[in-house]
Image 1 (cartoon, rainbow, N blue to C red):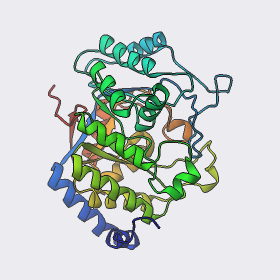
Image 2 (cartoon, rainbow, N blue to C red):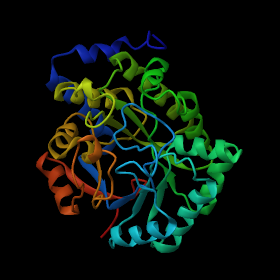
Image 3 (tube, helix red, strand yellow):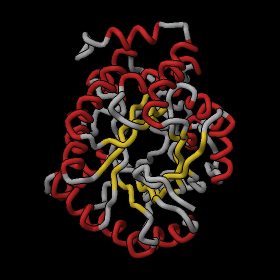
Image 4 (tube, helix red, strand yellow):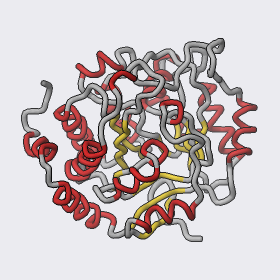
Length: 348
């Protein structure tokens, strides 16, 4: 097993049956960092395409080409129209992430950023393109990842999301996503982004073929990069959903294992301020439970603008009002705080 020999203590937490104690430790850390606050933002997503060169076995979203049922690839005009359809006054973020399309180039992706800058109010931050997408832009253009990130930043990119990390363990990646950017490449792209002043999030896809040790190894590698750069705003444990993909036979892990993973994430990643309980992936009730195991963020309003998890069997037609998100937090005894992309409180 790679790089897990020093992780016995967090691993022992997985073996604990004292869920109340685990919750208590995680809640103490979240309180030290974020008080009684639960953060959410007013946002929408754009997913330009689901036609992808990669063949990740866990993915329910991708399609081979435009002839396959359920495939799409948006033109810039379609993105402009979609932007006007989904944007609502008061939104502070647009989240752009999709597939690695075989026929899109760096100019197309920078054109999306330019379009969004021109069509949306100045207060809307553009969080766009996972490290996997950045890697492909670099490879297809023959430019360095640093050049790509600088170009996107100078065009108007505000931050990058944390997708594509999956599980860093080479054993797992060989099985579930062998042809995409590996762990060292993912980490290096985020390191470069942080050096350029581009903040980012980090993710971990869990609940498939990975071991508990490999989850902890993943967290520790993120912890080490955060100690180096300080550029991660939030960590997002992403639950594997089993519908409509090549790993459907695995089913899904139980609630106890999910909540343990959230609590251990909060404990291990004590140098990342926020842990996100992403409600379109978890659903409302499980997202609320995760707040009691260390999470302090529930993402945003979404406005039915993402299909990545709904196509895998999660929340259908994802969208919540600010009032609904506030109620989620308040029902758990927390105070809901609207934030922007960088956790500045939005004053209304």
